[in-house]
Image (tube, rainbow, N blue to C red; front, side):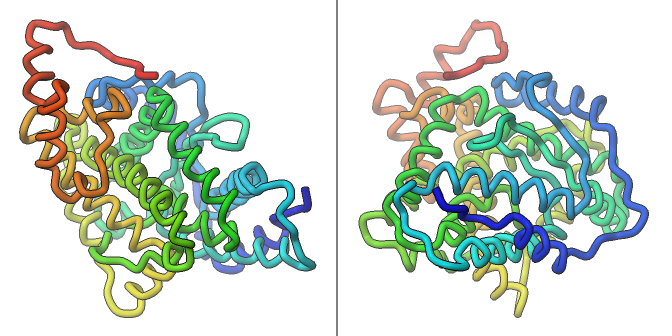
Length: 350
């Protein structure tokens, strides 16, 4: 297969766009990871297998380089071997990828990479951004890091303990890459710009505008899965006890304010896919808040089997999900009754 990403061009482009702070340090996440993992396993009922993946503090450039390697490997894996290339295409793809990551690098607080194409999963905590966020909001940086880590570990739980969830997203992405004729960077920016951006309301789905009709339903399903992933992680963050995160209310208010963009920033967010990512946070969070209000264990039902995954319409109208789950004998109320008297515990779903 011809080279699809020229790594040196991607790294160079990203570095041109990244403002690097001086004297940046990174944390040792050993103790924070132990604390956050207990919280996530308790709230989700899913296993993390903490020793099996890395949690690493990085600066902005380190985050960008990790992503360049991960994205390049993913694109190489998913792109059909017989797709024709052209002179200079690897360099153009590299500049596009480097530009995309360079624009994100100053915003990302943390990211979980589920290792769709690289050898092992990892969480990258961008300590440079965490410290900057905490300083501007006058919050404790280690407390912010713990709160962000809860979010990223929730993604670890989703993609590690729920095998069908991970495999379904990968299958959808494979369909898009195999059948589409548009740039893999454009596809990747929309379908797999995961864990990046922070929320707005309506957004322009740039990639879908260029997808053939037969692929739009595939892209919508992939977006639905990512909305579930983001909304669930956001909901888990907001369930953490104030004994563990004393300033949780201030964190939530600050992060919500950060997600409101206007003017030129809003236009840029729409064109780069950040706005689409932000809408995943808000729509997904609303869904999980609504079903949890019906029954506190309902969020676990979403990951119990593929049947629990909401449709696009159910995400917008959580009552539809509740009614469907009730009608098929696996409903919220039915499940809640079946749990009566059952000891609680972690559940690793496959």
